Image 1 (cartoon, rainbow, N blue to C red):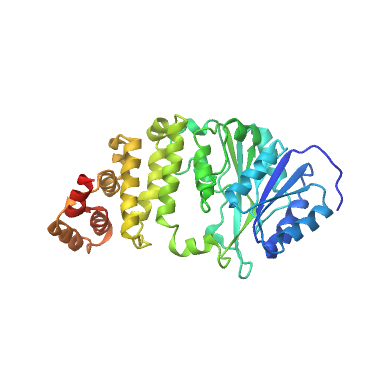
Image 2: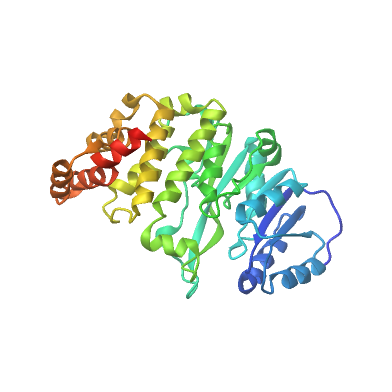
Length: 375
């Protein structure tokens, strides 16, 4: 299909790394968008399979497709490359093993222009890579709404920002909004970079719109994929902690941390990325090495030093607040008797048992404390 050169309204960025088996379905859904004035920027992130050849074939068939080759740097780096090259008024992201409804970008653009939004999000459907069946428990059809000033709103479970989900591919972003605030993906994260990017948007977002339409089809249960392993065991704990640290440091840098703390958004991030791993009954405590527990100890203490006032977390509930105090001030110089007592109490059911197990794991034995003080 030959398309004449034209002005670009939406730049669709597709980061590609060894996705040859899925690429045709994705590209077919993009070139048949009902919105014609688009460009499709495919960033070949150092693929070693047939992905580059397939991309070239598609580029020969549709002049709106642009290919950028780069050394492998991860999905975040590939998306950044696409954002820097984008010529559209708006930017969207699609993962190459997924596909979208033909009306997706026309619908999102219609809402974005109607409400003059920085970010516009839609619902999505999840399907199994094994048999293509719809996985309803992971699908989302968020209630429609428009938020006039997200960064100044109070957190609540039905807040519009919560309905958008912390993924980047179900959204349309105004490019000048992203560029004005220098918003890019953190390239040191090779997984779960969506979370951090969405959290970095939060202190800047003004008008945001959400529509319930399921316009994006997200592939799950793909063998070897990160999301598949996380569905079974949950996201690795240290990855979650590093994301929380990075987002909070960014909030402090842009002067939003105090507002986010007062409005409840920081407490929600704490609950999701830190407390949730300790308190969730569905998963055992993270299996960390002694070195990782020591790193976690330092990270948690640093995080609470950064955010300050502990009173802000009293509303989280008894055990959540108890964990906050524990993580902010892990036990120092615990003797063998105290550690044995904590080990005994860790056999208790529910959050009490969890609390004392974490207390034992995070505690610094007396000998290590003396060694630390001498150094």
